[in-house]
Length: 370
Image 1 (spheres, rainbow, N blue to C red):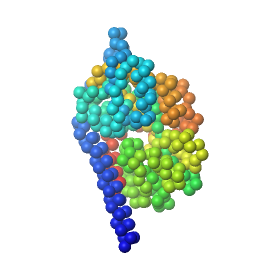
Image 2: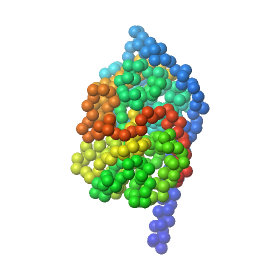
Image 3: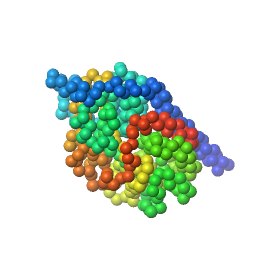
Image 4: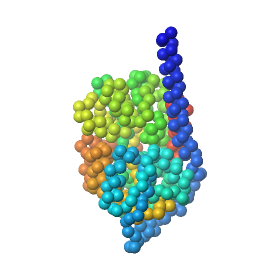
């Protein structure tokens, strides 16, 4: 009788977990679906030349209030924002939430959004806002300060730091040699009961969007369904996967690289390590980034904030405290980071195109049973 009750309890827990996942995924779909139809309205934004003129008018001074919608966690960027506030004299108001949620909010608010800045964890959320024509075009001198892959092709947003997809492994149970070259190789019987992932996490959704763009819906759905059938372990975000690998509870997690490096920096002695795949979207390097809303009431302060994020001190904070890749030339990456040039991220990814695939990615994740 006790065994039967336990089985019923576990089944109920599984059902509740799947229902909670579907609610989370449905929320993303609603936010995307509420956006106006994608068209060429982005072309209506100011040209680089016009924007430079607006943002550099001699009578304009830094000051006033700056409203930031931040998809980057408060624990990660609050001190950076406070430093900007202290050094610039600008009063800053911050709204923290997930990047996809904030992108949907900005689209719904449209031309009356109170936000001056959208500071996003991922480029796909920036792409959603870009496609709706709600960003100002940034000056060329800001855009060229980072690599071309780390900004919007038409100049509507610019990268602030880089993050790579990776696998975190427990080296006590996994050898790098048994791992596949790309993410599709994880859909193998030998990895049954050994995989972890966070199916509702924005970075996982971004990776799936990339896979759809490069490989098509059918192949991606087959991969998702295969992974789902391997008795994977589900996590809400990346951090718990890294902690589980560190404690010996998980063999392989699908994460962003810096979560592993932060734990290693804090704990020192650990059996976990990052493995960077040789090719494909499982090796994708994504920029976190920032854009100025066309509806901004304080474009001068908004521009000053972007320049601050590209400053030497902030770029060093990104790499030495957050273990992300600095994007501005001349900044030495932290020693724990791999050489960015040696990572095999897909070339010439169109972040705006991936933004279009985000809704399909969420749909396929739900259809495959996550």
